[in-house]
Image (cartoon, rainbow, N blue to C red; front, side):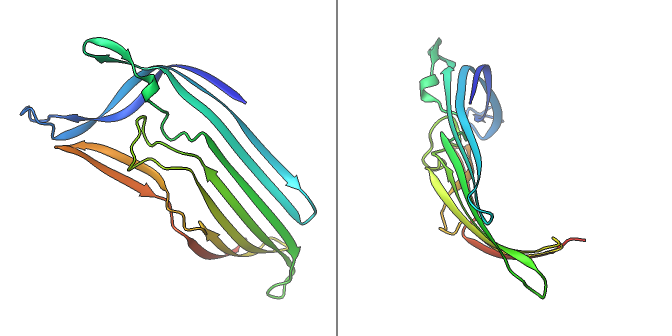
Amino acid sequence: MFYADYEDVQVPASVAIDTDGDGVDDSFAGATTNAAKATIQGVELEGVFQFTNAFSATLAFGYIDAEYDEWLVAVGGMLTDISSLRNFQNTPETSGNLTLRYDWPLSLFGGDGSLALIGAITHRGDTQQFETANALLDQSAYELYDASLIWTSDDRRYQVGLHGRNLGDEEYKIAGYDFPTLGGSTITAFYGNPRTVTGTFSVNF
């Protein structure tokens, strides 16, 4: 478990600027604002389970409650607390991973070794890219499914693998930007890799 009580949280952002003094914003610049107080608390759990000599599992789970307690800005010449309108960026409330592994002996290429079947599910909760919500950038909760089949020689010299990532072909955002521009803004989102299947072969000397 963890608990953190912060003061003077520095929050990076971008603001529109008028570079030629004609009264019209035509570019943007980085800016840092200050949130007076914030509280971050939560719990992280990790476990390794060995059910049999061949079958094992690893588990990780995280829960975080991150809130701004005070964020003062000048509105109409008066300081106003907007903390209830702001959320922590890139801080999902829940995240986790479960990996299952099964190993069995298997001779391959004329050599003794073992074959491992590995399956994993990864969870990430609702995520905002910035302190204020943006439907074009924010990502709702999702799960990713991966699987691998890996043969390893007993002397650990050779390894052959077949790997599948994001087997559900989930479409999910991993980052994004909202740049102020003339007459509006330019919104750019970056996505995680789609379903991929790869093969690997390695030799250790």
